[in-house]
Image (cartoon, rainbow, N blue to C red; front, side, top):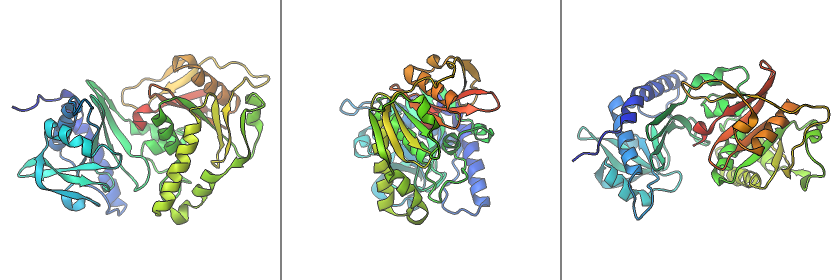
Length: 378
C-alpha cells in the first residue's frame, strides 16, 4: 500500500523546480561552485508528499518536525551515513524524527535504485539545495540557503490545501525594506561579506519566542524619535548597549569564525527576548540598544494614523488599504503611528499567532506601508 498523493505537491512542484533552475543557473554564471543539485519535478513532488504525510503522524504523541535536503551523500558535510538506506516513506520519517528534530540537522535524500531514499543526516548543505521542512502538522516550508550563515530563503509555504508561493518580484520595488529584500534572497548593499542581515535574524528570533513584540529601529544620529515615546522610559538604557553593534562591526574579519557566529546569535536572542516585555524595544540603525518596554505616543502636532498600505510578497496576493487595527492589536496600531510620525524609522511587529509585519513609510504613497512577511519567516 502506498500513501495517498498530496494534491498540493503536484500543484507546486513545477514552479519550485523553475525557481531552483533559475537560481542555480545564475549562481553558476557568477562562478559559484558551492551549490546544490538541480531537483527534478518528480523528486520535488515525492519529497513534499512524504513530508506531508509524515507531518500528520504521531510518534509517542508528538508531531514529527524534520528537515529533508535533496543531495547525494558525497555532498553532505558533517554527515552520518546509514549502513542501509531508508525508504522515503511517511512511516520511516516519523520514526526517525525524534533523533533529528533539533535545528540544523537535515535528513539527506537522494536516488537509490531509481527511487528516492534517506541515506543519512547532514548539518551542512550547499547553497540552493532543495530543503523541505516539516514545521507542524500539515505545515511545510520549501526553502534553500544562499549563504553559509543566516536564515534560509523560503520558496513556498504549504499548509493543508493552502499554497503560498513566494513572489520574488517584491524585492525589486524601489521602497522595499532591506529586511524584506534579504528574506527574498536579494543581496542588499551594505550587508557584510558574511551575508548576515541582523534585522532578519532579530525578526526570526522575535517570532520564535511567540509572546508577540515590537522593535523600533531609529536613526543613531537623531533624537527626534523621543517625541513619539512616553517619558520617562521605565527601561531606558544609558549609555546605549553596544554589544550587537560591536559584533556587527567585526563581521568583515570574523564572519567565518564559529565563536563570532555564536556570540552574534546570543546577542540577537537577548535583544529579541526584550521585545516580549510590554511596550516597544528600541535600537538604532547601528544596532545599539537604547530602550525596551517603551510606550509609543502621538507626536505633538501629529494626527492619528487611519489607513496603511498592506502587501504580502506572495503570488496572487492583493494590495489592500486597511486600518492598522485590522492587522492586529495595539502593537500594530502603535507601530504604524510611530512610523507615520517618525518617517526615517521602521518598526517590526510580531504577533503571538506567528504573524509578522514590517512597517515603513512609503514616500510614493505618502502613507505607512505594512509588509506582511510571516510566509518568509516560518
